[in-house]
Length: 137
Image 1 (cartoon, rainbow, N blue to C red):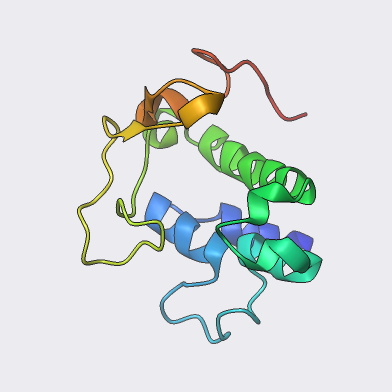
Image 2: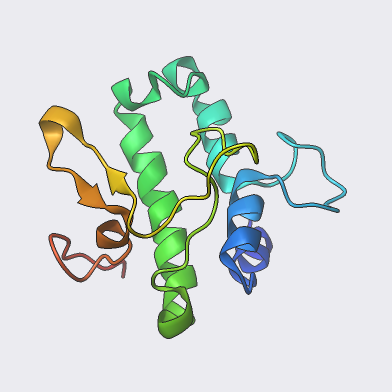
């Protein structure tokens, strides 16, 4: 992903635009999914191995380095308009984000099983409040 690709991603005015660009699904994009400079899937495909399976990719330590970069881009995007973007979300409750499922809401709960407590989505949207305390420099 080049600097101009990052600029293109960060120029999104809405969460939906950001989500589609980071995942390579932007409507009207002349690139084909998987070939477009899309940060999220291309990181998985480039690393290969476990990264190509969404159900086991967290078993590969490189998953966390890759997702730290996705999180960093998200934090930069949010910081461009904190009031309007801090709690902006979209998508559905389906992990593959099909339109046949209910939309996710800030009050939906995320269950972390044995690794953490159940929290509402809105509690995970700010890296400098609640249980989180980190910024990207």
